[in-house]
Every structure is written in structure tokens, then in C-alpha cells.
Length: 629
Ligand SMILES: Nc1nc2c(ncn2[C@@H]2O[C@H](COP(=O)(O)OP(=O)(O)OP(=O)(O)O)[C@@H](O)[C@H]2O)c(=O)[nH]1
Ligand SMILES: [Mg+2]
Image (cartoon, rainbow, N blue to C red):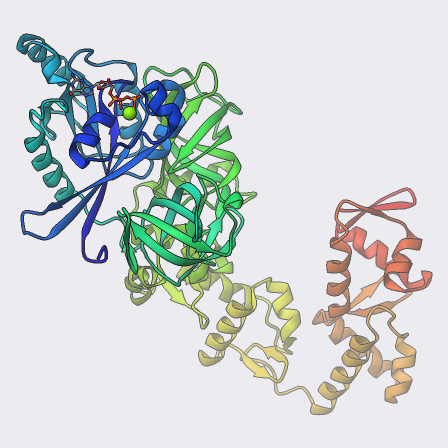
């Protein structure tokens, strides 16, 4: 069972015809060049998959999967899709030809993708003289120096797929390489970037990929991103063996229910439903290769991550171009959405002439709109070197008094609920973060700001609870949480629907309060077509002076709002509804007639209300028309 078998994925890399596919076949017995065109041309075009079962030194079973990539420069897109999901690389260099352009490019791509383990073989050793082999070995050694495949960290083995020379030693090295790789991201939600989709007779849609993180179980539902299409795992295999569940690091083939093969493509990602979503704007740290040219604002690049690729537009923070050999924060706007989380690696290629120019890692897949550049940059700077715990703190802090729900944090970080709770626990116990009733997280600074926003608005005579909430613009969970906290701390008093400061004068006469509530509810029920004050006074049997006094209090507490000169009073809730309704027409123009039609009001009400909307900058008057902003 894959559940207990350690499983790693090793990708091949190297120049065309250097012997990658032949070597994989010698190790696994599988010819991964399946396509007729591959057979005819004798080259690899698309990704090939094979596996080798071995025993770990502790005698536990070990499965090494190979993703064999094409060396031809025209198929580099497929190579990138293969390399995007591998734990380690097997760099294959022909003893006949030595280091060639795609040897270099593939190695650069592996480094940019953050692959930091692997080994190098000089193959076709049978085809050259010992002195040539010696010569190539020393050239390869120099070429690898300073890279993650430097002889200080990784072996260089001469082998021959034809005679079998060096293959036993290579198997041993592959096993120790596999033992060094650790299980991927145990704290991350399941993510399966897809590399193939096909139909299997009698089964239907089958997709394959390398499970990048998490676990999958038969029967489970997943979402296909982009598109949030819900599918169910009907069956599961790894390298032809039926499984009930698989862990990260495994090659997996899923038989999916609920989707036609024509709706699935390489580059899409299967994720746990309602967790991760594909995004189009990302903030990243990008490094440019020393041999590339300057990367300018608004340049178009090819963006490759996992099995996906898309065109993207570069947005620079600041106006200087990114220079070759340097690292910079940049924003990328992807033409096609991709399911990405912080830490994900990517490669950038220029369109013409086609070449790999750099790559990097995602810092933030949910940049906030309208945040000033300087603030964004300093936030990214802080985030970049922060521990996971500190990163979560920064992410919650960025949301200010809006707070951050655990579900939103899951989407933004790709972490499991359990990992988020565990990682934020020390922050909660040291009171740097607060957990609001429904699990929303709030920094202590934001909590203090929310308190201040409420306390500064408290009046000794009290204020209507919903009016207060409207003024503070806090969301319900946080508003209720802070009100409860302040009540317990005796920093405010609750009187029915009214919130008052604790030092308030003796209770307002009961009778007064009743009358105010009565007036307010008459206006609330009337909505926009508000009655004249004189009518209300008569209906409640109030004299002029009393009515004026009560109206002043209702205006002060912002329960009623005064419109225009002809003393039109409207309940705040009716105005809020009107604002929302008109805001929905954003970008359209309306005239008085249309407004009357929408609201069902007469001109007497319509004009002052439109003027109110102009003052509130919801509409802008232009001759007889108004533009909804
Ligand atoms: N003499 C000799 N020839 C080899 C050896 N390995 C591969 N070849 C030959 O080299 C040629 C290319 O081998 P492939 O394995 O297709 O090369 P590749 O790197 O997979 O090529 P692409 O996938 O197209 O990049 C074939 O003709 C192989 O027979 C070897 O160890 N010794
Ligand atoms: Mg090949």
C-alpha cells in the first residue's frame, strides 16, 4: 500500500539524445517514449513515467518514480511541466557530447524550481575511450561547481545503459537520494497538479499527476481549479497498482466521476473543495539569470509553475528594470488563473527569442487591492524572512480590524486547519493574536483599534447599537466581540438596543426612551417616503417643543438623518438600503425620472435624496443626469 511505502519522484534532465529515456528503461524496464511520433523520430516529445521498486536500507519498501522529460528545446514547456513536480533530478550527460545548451538550461530550471537534490550521470560511457571519459568528467565537474549538484554534495557517475556499466552503483545512489528526500509539506492541504487526462475504456475520465502535498482517499470529493468544478475520486492507482489512499510524493492516477475528459487539461490542479482557489495576481520574489537581459515594467513573459504555464505581465515595484543576476519583488498578472500558494516556485521564460530568463517563489497570492506600493513592499520585505508563525501574524495583521477567518487563512497559505491552529496557538497564548467567537483572528493592535473606534463614539446618553456598528464599519463578529468585551470590562453599558458610556448620567427617563423608540420605528417603517414631523407629533400626541427635543436626540445619535432644507427626516437603515441599491448601478447614469421609477418616490422626496447621494459621492451630477460612482 502506498500509504506506507515511501515514494519519491525523480525527474530526468539533460540535452537532446543524451540517453535519458534509455537510462530510465535500463533502470525500470519501461520504455517511456509511448507516442508513435516519439518512436518514429527517436526523441522524447512529452513526459514519460516509470517506476522502480527497491528496498530501503532499513528493509522497508521504497518506490522511486521517474518523470522522463524531453531534451529538445522546442519541447521545453513539457520539460518544465515535468520538472515542476519532482523531488530530485537525475542529470544525464552524454560522454560523447559533454555539456550542451539544454544541459545548462535544464540545470538552471531545476535550481530556479528549488530542486536541491540530485545526481549526475555521464552516460554512453561504452561509446568513448577512457581518456575521453576522464576529460568529460573533469569538464562536467567544473560545470557543476557552485550548483546544487556540485561534487561536494552530489555524485557524478559514469554509466552505460547499453552495457549495464555503473547501473548497480546508480541504483544504490538513487536509493540513498530517495532516503534523503523528506515527505512534502505535511502541513499543507492536498494539491494535485495534473499532467495528463485521458479516457480509459470502462472507467471514463482518468487524470494523472504527482501528489504535491496532503493525502487523497478513494470516495473523496475534490475541486478542479481553476473553475471550482467538483469531482469525486472513483478509483485510484499508482503505477498500475490499485490503492485506497495515497500520500504526497506519489505518482497517482485518479478515475474521476463528475467530469468529462474534454473539461480537464494539463496545468489544472485538484484541491480539497472550498480551500484553495486559482489566482491571477501574485507578488513574488524573482531572480534573473546572469545571462538574461533587463526585465522591464509591463513586459510579457511565460510563467511556468508545476504543470501549468501561462502568459503573464510583469509589474515592477518602482520604475527601474530588474537587472540580470539580481533578485527583486515584482507583481505578476497571469493571463490564466493558477492554484498557487506562498513558497511555490516558478520559472519565467521570455517570448522571443525563447529562453529561460529567471524564476523565483510566490510570496503572496492574495495581494490586497488599493494598498500603496510602499506599504506593500515593506510588508513583503517583512514576510520574506519571517518564520511561518510570524508570516501568519503578518497576514492577520494586514487585514486590520476586518480580522481573518481560519478558512481565509487556509486559502491564502494552503495550510491545513489543524496546522493553522497549531501554528497560531503561541500567538494566541501570548495575546499577540485574539481568537474572536467564530474563530476569526485579530491582532492585538487591531483589537485596540476596534475598541477605540467604538469607545470614541460612545455618548453618555447612548447610541443605537446598529447605528454605532454602521459608524465603526466593523463586521458583525468583531463588533459583537468588542461590545461584549467592553461590557465585561464595564467600559460601556447596554440598555436594550442602546450602547452607552459607563459614566452616563442617570438613566434617561423611561418615558423619553419609549417615545424616541416610537418615533424611530415610525420612520423605520416609512422608509424613504418619510412622514412630516408634525404628523408624527400628532400621532404620538406630542407638543412641538417635546418633538423638537426628541428629534434633536435622534439626529445626534444618527438614527435619523436630515435631508435638504424642507426638513425631510429619513431613518438611517432606509438610507443604507438606498445606498446599496444605487451603488449596484455602478457605472450607469440615472436621471430623476429613473430614480423615481427605481424608488417609487415622488419628486418631493427624490430631489433631496439625489442631492444627499451626490454629497455622499455615490452619484455625481452632470446636467440632468447623474453618474453612479
Ligand atoms: N552507446 C550507447 N548509446 C546510448 C546509450 N544510451 C542511449 N544511447 C543512444 O542514444 C540515443 C538517444 O537516446 P535517448 O535515450 O532517446 O536520449 P534522450 O536523452 O531520451 O533523448 P530526448 O528525450 O529526445 O532528449 C539512442 O540512439 C540510444 O540508443 C548508452 O549508454 N550507450
Ligand atoms: Mg528521451
